[in-house]
Image (tube, rainbow, N blue to C red; front, side, top):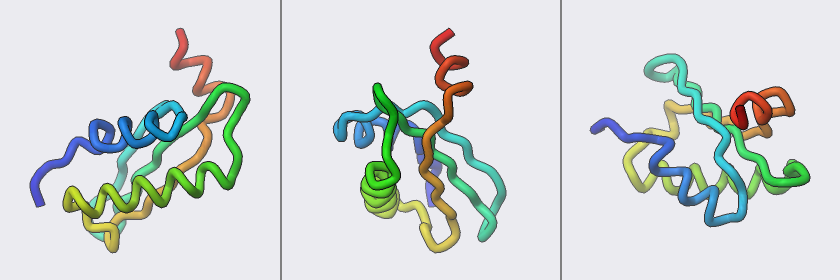
Length: 88
């Protein structure tokens, strides 16, 4: 698989759904790869909204060649401290 800039791929999807991509973290290798995506919106984001975003991201990552069998995708709210840190 060629190198894929995950944030570049998923940010337009997240923003197109009306949310903000607050960050992307990737850790591990091979079957132990974890991809953590932080998403939020003004007033906060619900678990149902995070689930919708997760499904959309997962579909697009498959299209661009990310092996989702080896990658654990976690989509969550960044929490108040991360939002304040990214604003400054």
